[in-house]
Length: 282
Image (cartoon, rainbow, N blue to C red):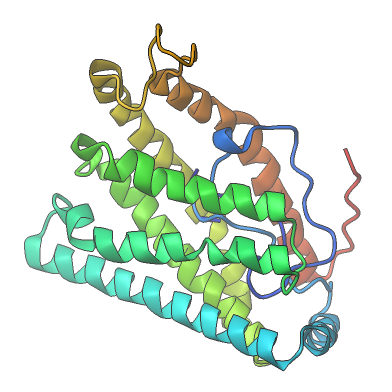
């Protein structure tokens, strides 16, 4: 959920490294976004020159139209999350409180987070060589957090925890999409690269804490109302309890957060410090 805003592959939209992170066997419904639906975000080289060379080769393989579309997509997403950031700052400066913040920015948040479904399409048609499964888990878990938790369970919308993951997601996505945009244009400023591989150190834990606390705050309401649950008996002879589903989702953070977080730390050492990291398959 939440997700991991932001570490499973190099660049979901701008082009990741050839070998994606292999997740442990977990259900997509129980995966988490990790504050930013992050992947490792590198262009695959330990040194900057190697990264630029690989990026140029990748664009030649993609062709002009695919590259132009990816550039447009990443510019649009960067702009969208910037608009969201400005709206949040303006709201707090005018109101002096977080209460009502989610309601004021929810349309923008829902639009751009749902628009990210195109990243799964990018993988399916092959213009981004990232695992469809990994990308699908990351995007769908974010959408789950937006639509099936915060949107659907209105009593949690004024929780402080919502602000935690909103701020974390927003900073992460601005950094991530601007990183992809400049990489596609072959003009990646060092600060953007540095921010991409340093901000997550704080943003990941903050975003995950916000997501978990928000889900936790939703549990009493879900248990009381029985929302999204299917009770027996029914003609399909199937039951589903959304309350326990949320508990399982929360538990899934325990194995996934360390795995993805430490993967991102390894990528950080490789990209910023030129270390050669050899990751063994499970």
